[in-house]
Amino acid sequence: MTQIIVLPHVELCPDGAVIDVSPGTSVCDGLLQNGIEIEHACEKSCACTTCHVIVREGFDGLAEAEEKEEDLLDKAWGLEPHSRLSCQALVTQTPLVVEIPKYTINMVSEGHKK
Image (tube, rainbow, N blue to C red; front, side):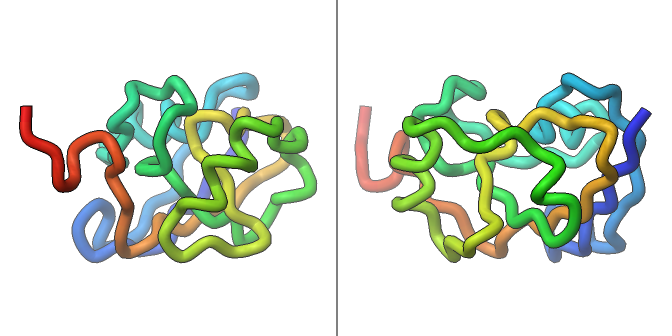
C-alpha cells in the first residue's frame, strides 16, 4: 500500500486525510474509495478537468502524463507545474501529497442545459 496525504479542502476534506492506496490504482479512485468525493464529471475517461489535483510531493514518482491529459490540463482552473488529472495518475510505491484545488471547471455541465 502507498500512502497519500490529502491536504485540507474546505468542502471535500476539511481536515485533510491520510489514506492507503494499492499501487496501480488511480489517485481519483483512491480518493473515492476513501470517502473523498472528488468530482469526476466524465466518469474518469480523461475528457474533462474536474478531477484535477496538484501533487505537492511525490510528483516524480508518477508516470509522465500522456498528451491527451496534458492537453486537458491546459484548461484546468489553477494549473500548476505539478498538476495532474487524478483519473490518469496511477499510484506507484512513491508516497504522495496531493491538494485538491478550490475550484473546478466542469466543461460537461457548466452553462449547458439538457
